[in-house]
Amino acid sequence: MTKLQKKDINISLTKNPKQKPDQSNLGFGNHFTDHMFTMEWNVDKGWYNPQIVEYAYIPMSPALISLHYGQSIFEGMKAYIANGEPVLFRPEENFKRLNQSAERLALPQIDEDFALTALKTLLEIEKDWIPTLEGTSLYIRPFMFGADEFLGVKASSNVKFIIILSPSGAYFKDGLQPNKIFVEDEYVRAVRGGTGYAKAAGNYAGSLLGQKKAEKYGYAQTLWLDGVEQKYVEEVGAMNIFFKIDGKYVTPELNGSILPGITRDSIIKLLKHNGEVVEERKISIDEIYEAADNNKLEEVFGTGTAAVISPVGELFDGKKKVVINNFETGEATTKIYNQLTGIQLGKVEDSFNWVHKVK
Ligand code: PLP
Ligand code: COI
Image (cartoon, rainbow, N blue to C red; front, top):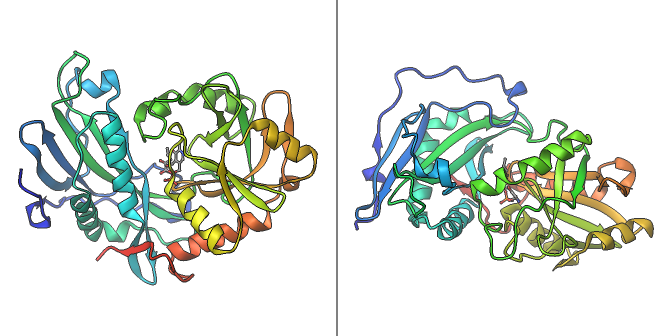
């Protein structure tokens, strides 16, 4: 099978460019740019037909295999304008993780270099869509799904890969304001040997009932516990989680059931670079409650591409309530937020070489 290159991408530009939305009122995931990248795969042919076309509805059969059996994965990344130029943050990590998800869902591997080339080509066309107001970015959503028209349960012989772009504001309305998180001890998100480490669409479908429950109690997101003992902290709905306990940072270790967040990895590296102690280990919800009771739970924050850094101000499991740092954004959270966003926006030295120019 031939290796696809930039020159193979067929580009047909829209004749009807859309009006760009007001940057001060974007919300998250509401608006889409003029174009998208699409490519197809067939078990005999490999990947073919890479193209950039007008963002439009895609025709599909009611028997589309992934609608019925959820053979569907996605990624989330962002483009920013840093010093006047479009940039990406660690994009190769997202395509690497897309391939890890693809393997788990029996979807084909993509050529990570070509996927990045395709994204950059799309971004060159859409660069005027990258918002510049503080807290905004162009959210990038690559995704892949089984495209067979077939009702048997099997790995699809035809697959589609698409990248769409969405100018977005903060994922949480309140920006760097503390969120209230509901500790879920009834439903679980992922189990040992399951798909938790993959960015599989079905993981999110399975989390919605827990999310609704959290919202019913007035909480923004769910804190998931492990699927075996329902005792150890895993992650939040769309974020990994960090606890600052008695001067040290603790985050759940990658155990196969949590998503290996790229922001999580970046924060671990930045904290260590700052001389902090970071422990990646099992951490039980009881240890968190105990630390809170002993005034040792200093700060809690979530990390994710969409959410960036999100302070947690309160944890509640239906019985026990823990308020963190008087429901204020703490110093450590603010520092790491400024450091990460400073690197992404080209205002802080990028000593890890994480920022990629689009051109
Ligand atoms: N955990 C879940 C379930 C997520 O959906 C996300 C978002 O992508 C994360 C963690 C954070 O991952 P990343 O930092 O790579 O965005
Ligand atoms: C991201 O942070 O990119 C995510 O994928 C979160 C999302 C489910 C909105």
